[in-house]
Image (cartoon, rainbow, N blue to C red; front, side, top):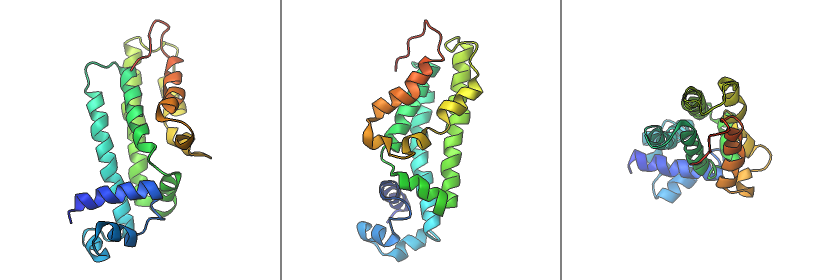
Length: 194
C-alpha cells in the first residue's frame, strides 16, 4: 500500500469521525491491510494524524495558491474564493476532529494552527493590503484588526456550540461570515462579487 493512499484515507476518516475516535484497527480493516503495515510508514498514531493533516492541508494550499495566481480576480474576490474553498473542506470536519487535535495530537495541532495562521496572516492579510492600496477598501479601515476580528478564528465560530455546517449551507455561512464583513469595509462604489 502506498503511503499517499494511506494518508488520504486516514485524513478523510479522521476528519469525519474525529482523530481520537477513529482507530488504527478500523483504518487497517477498511484498507484491507494489517496494523503492522501502517507502522511501517508511521512510528505511532500521532505521526499518522500529523502527516495526514499535513497531506490534507497541502491539497487545500494547492487550490488556494491557484486562486492567488488568478489574474481575473481582484483581492476581494480572491478572499471570498479562498474561504469558499476552505469552507468546502471545513464542512466535512467533525468538531471533534479539530478539538481532538488540540487535546490529543499536539504535532497535528501545530500543523493545523500553522496552516490557519498562514492563510490569515499571509494570504488574507496581504490581499486586504492589496485591496486597500487599490482603493477597494476604505482608507479608515485597520487591516490588521479586520483580519484578527473576522478571519482568524472562523473555524472556531462555525464549530463553537453547534456545528454551523450542519445547520446552514456553506454558501449561507460564506455570505454571513465573510462576504457581509467584506461589504462593510469596501468603498461604496465597489460591488462585492465572486
